[in-house]
Image (cartoon, rainbow, N blue to C red; front, side):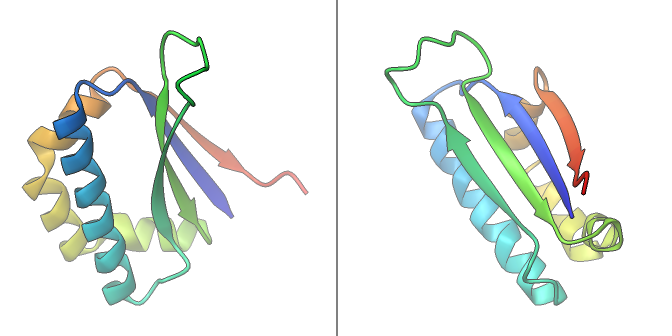
Length: 104
């Protein structure tokens, strides 16, 4: 399994809502592609946490390297990425990105 993590800071509430809606849309696309065990989630730190940067993250849950590549190379995924290019760029511009692999 692979977990991709995009750490970033939210610019404003309206943009965050639109971004979350775009993730719900891409998750539906991933199901349509036939790989429902793969999906994105969006998380953020609690308001009481005093961390000053990278307070939010998007996590990609991937069953395998093959699924990751199949999804990211699929025309429907690419169409989604193009449709939301400007919105997603707000988050991706200053992100910290990591891909984690199981070690067992």
